[in-house]
Structure formats: C-alpha cells, structure tokens
Length: 219
Length: 219
DNA sequence: CGGGGACTTGATACTGTTCAATTTCCGTGG
DNA sequence: CCACGGAAATTGAACAGTATCAAGTCCCCG
Image (tube, rainbow over all chains, first blue to last red; front, top):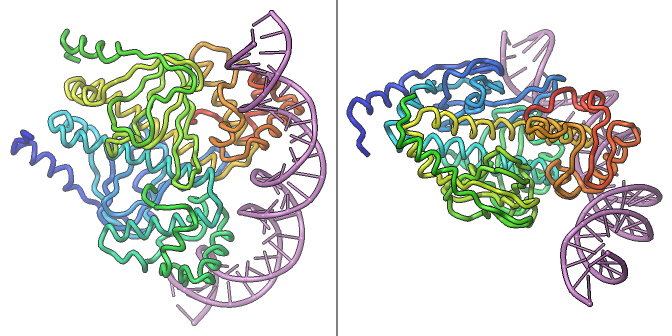
C-alpha cells in the first residue's frame, strides 16, 4: 500500500489521544465546531438531535469500535449531542488530519468513506423501523441488534445490561416509555426474554426475530 | 488549490457521462455492485429500502443537484433502489475515480465528505420527524421542505407539482395514503394550502410552519 | 439510609389505520 | 382525438394501537 514509516507514525498518533468521560459527560454538543471524529474505545454513548420546539430524538446508541461525529462535516458544525451513558474512553481523531492522511493512504480514505456510508445505511434501517414497524417489532429489532453487537465484541449475545433508560429506548424507537415497559413485560410473559430492570436475557431469539420479519443486521 | 490542467480535464470527464432515464426506470437496485454515485441533473428520483418481509420504506425524494448512491460504499453493494419518478437526466460518477481524484484535489475530497455528511444529517432529521411528530406535522414539514428546495432551484416556492403519489408520500412519512389525503384536505379547509391532485399551492406558509415548531431546513 | 428518579401497571382517550365505496384522473390504444 | 379502463385519490365509519394520565413500587445514587 506504500505506507511509509512516517505515515504509519502519523496514523498511530491519531489514535493516541484517548480521553475519559464520566457518565453524563458530553463528547460534543449541537452547534460546536467540527474538530474531530470520535472513536469509542469502551463505554456507551448516545447521540441525539434537538428540535427548536424542545423535542429531541435519540439517533443512536454507540459502543466500542464505533465512530461518531460525522454529522459535523457537512457544515463544520455538530448537529447533534453525544452523551456518555456510562464512563467511557474515547479517541479523538482530528478530522483535518484524517482527511490529509487519507490523501496519502487510499486504504484509510476508503475506510473513512465506508464508515460514513455505514452510518447512512444504518439510518435508512431506522427510517424503515420508525416508518413501518409496530411497537413490538421495533423493540424486538432493537434487542436483537444490541444482542448482535454485543456478540460481535465477544460478550454474551443472550444476557446483557441495558445502558439506557426506558425513556431513551422509547425516544430512539419512536414510542413512549410506558409502551417500552409494557412491551418488555409482554415479551417476558411470552417467554421470549427475561427482564429485570436493566438486565435483559434473550431466551428465544428465534421467535423474537419472527416479530419483525428477519435479521437485525442494519441497525 | 494546485489543480493541474490534466486534473481539471479528469474532473470534467466525470460529469460528462449523462444518461437519460424514463419514468419508472431504475438507476440502481438493492444488491447491485457499487459502480458510481449519481448526480441528478433534471427530474425527480425516489430511493427506497426493502425489507425481507416485503415492507419497504421510501428514504428520500431527490431532485436536481442532489447526489445519491452513497449507501453502496459501505459494502460495495447498493442497499436501496433508486427509481425515476419522472423522466430524468443523471450523471454517473464512477466512485473509484472520484476517490482517486479526491486524493489529488483536497477540495473535491472535502466536497465528497460534505455530501455524505449532509445525507447523514438529513437522515437524522427524518428520524426526528418519524419518531416524534404527528401526521399533520410531518406533512407540513414535507411540504415546506419541498417548497424550499424548489425555491433554491429558482422555481416558485408556493406553487408546484408533486411528483410522487400519496402512497409514496405516506410511505416516506410513515403514514397511510388515506391519512395523507385527509391531512391535505384538512390543510386546504384551513386555508393553508390548495391541493388539486398533484398540484399544490402553499397559501399560508407561516401557519403551516407553525405546525411543527420551526424550519424545514434539514429534510 | 433517605429521597428522587426509574419503572410498572391500569384505565381511558385519541390519533391514525383499516375496510369499503365512489369519484377523478390519466395513459393507452383504437 | 376521444373513449376506455385501471390506477390514484377522496371520504366515511368502525376499529386498533399507542399515548396519556395516574397511582404505586422499586431501585440506586449521593
């Protein structure tokens, strides 16, 4: 690929600036100028857009290995908030350097493009979910998506802790917290899952999956 | 910016491959390999994602000056369909060349990044709309967004033709075609708009805007 | 260990869907 | 160019899915 030692060093430099955030801390806020993209190392982050009238929409829950902040490239200004849902470690990737280095390293360039594209595809999946699924289906999709992402990181796909409140889940999925709670209880009664507060166990992934047609791949 | 004559020529080459599509033609289909991005010159395109169970979701209506196809970068495969809603002219921009040229022309590179980011921001706006607005608000937002985009292209912001059916509008906005129809009639009775089939006139943008808090900027 | 937020559950209200019946529009073929 | 036929749109009535309001419990943070 023609990566020189100097370039390699630059790339390493990019990932060295790790920073710790406490639960509730903001990585960035809507309106802040674009400085960096943020690569999550550990922890859990939520992103949310705000509406002038006070409404807000959670646009995603991000975990280790995921990169956020790309909304800011469009106008050199962040258009959403990013908040730590638990204590987290995050790498700041100065976007200017990323672009510059991308010009020298086609692999890096391509990688950046794929990451942005993946976000677009994910968003389309959520539009499908919000636009055409019922509450049960949305929640089933949500749980299976979490399950899959935990599995991909070496954690149990069947037992995990929710890092967000019912309110935040509901906001993300376009439903009220009471509906989230009721639907979780309903899944539990049906023997599909077991819930106790934030501890969730998926008992019957197959039938849970049946709730919304098929795979939870693109959330 | 240090653009050489040769590079300039390459850039021009990119935009030369214009192609005509008839109403109903597909620019690309879900599953097709990534070849190009598509810059719309004239006409109207809709993009839609498909779900295994047959459900589909319109993810956008695109018009002159807008670029689509970025969903395909993630996996080198398109994840949605793009269909011409009327006869249209579209430039194909071979993505490989775009990336290559981006390495030489920082301005082009930055431009591509902004376009992808803009799509992400737009999608977040739609998530907000789908997740937290009522039918009236969604439709008002939709009409004002169209109005604004027509205005930006030198057309009347107050009188225009819808290029899509009630079904397609409803699918995009997460509601049924009957609800779209009813809500349009309701807006008309309230003196906010005038509708006759696909011909829409916005009579009272101010009060229409009041329906959903504020600006239609990010749709 | 105290208190406030998070969660659960029930009863009721309401928005939007579904089903159905017409009407209108528009593209196609004669 | 007109007539035809199927698609698109409108409108009504009954129904379903969620939201809303409310009360009470549980958890966990400081």
